[in-house]
Length: 399
Image 1 (cartoon, helix red, strand yellow):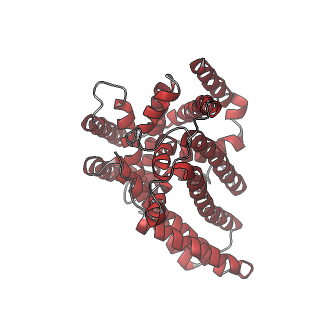
Image 2: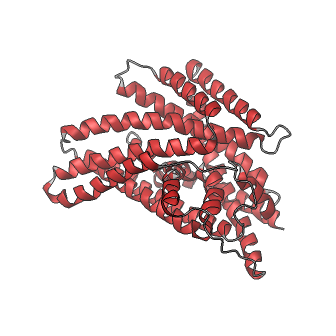
Image 3: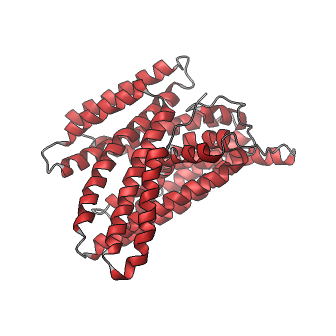
């Protein structure tokens, strides 16, 4: 019965999301890009990690994580508005903007490795060849395919996949939440809900949370949609994407954290599959479909974004395909020298540096504007927080 309801939910949600009137709406299209980026990969790994580490406090930790991300989003929205005002920016702000763009391109290098290592792990998960070696081989093959495509044809044809993968991903997430809701309700009726104590506390818990920033990252994509949407639309859509993603994440983690005991399942990058097998038989297959489509399209988007940034930052001295080659080299190094949890921490630290630089830009700009002198302290503190996350963020210890 649950499987049928889940499939109906997925079908109805996908139909609504692909409805032309909604799909072509300016506000929706502006919001769906950051929304899909925020929840696309984090949804696959965040629940098991938080449940295993923080137990009954997992929803609180997630709320804090989303809150920190919202504050960084506030700094980026401030910068969007200031650029739109046309007021000359301080020299230091311009230099920091260049540094932050370089940092973002480097963060994209790591995030692509994160996406494709997830793709490799989920791609092998339900096959007879489910080993770390084979997952890495699949990841390597996809990296080489991306490099070949980027060097020979470009990504324009593949970028259309993004439109369909976003709808598929959100529809499957809706089905997953419905399935988890049934399971949670049944456990509650049976009086079998769990209040698990955290397994990580104090400073280790804080640094672990720092290392998970990548799982709520993605809202900054609104900053770079200026050729498509005006500043007001981008600011509004970023807020809406962060609000909605926080709501979805909190519902998800509440439904998960009080029905699974930490340690009962091995903490791996595909642990969510083991959990969802208990909830409903159809969910593992849906999750893998979502993972393959979403991670591949996200990798294409970030590879293309990194190439464009590098070309712009070098005044066209380097072509996008030069950046693609470096990106693939970095990705293959991370794939074979580390594990997915280390890559998550590296990506989190790289994006924290980018967010810290964006907050520093906001602080410098506010300091030069008399009416915003108080704001400079807020943005300055936010910049320090970003740099602290970059320094102290650490990886989860997988099983």
